[in-house]
Amino acid sequence: MAYTGKLREPLLDQLFEAILQLESIDECYQFFEDVCTVTELKTMAQRLEVARMLQGNFTYGEIASQTGASTATISRVKRSLYYGADGYKTVLSRLHTHKDTGD
Image 1 (cartoon, rainbow, N blue to C red):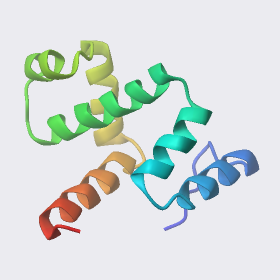
Image 2: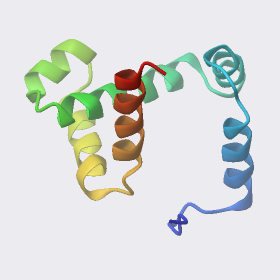
Image 3: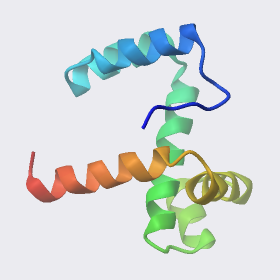
């Protein structure tokens, strides 16, 4: 299914094409260290972990304690997880499958 949301634009297409060219975690570190600030990267990683924990039915308190995320961030991620474009669900499902198969 092709994404048809509000964000679609050529520069973002180029960025996402570039990301799809990365072949290893090391290459991801190299690219994202150049493109993002440390804070931006840690924020994205935190949000992904919040989404994972929300899917695991952890409480807001548990999530805040383990990730350091504010309740506002947890709420925002929850909204995206349940009413967004299904990006979190897609990635978390694939990460779960990847871990299960040992790939």
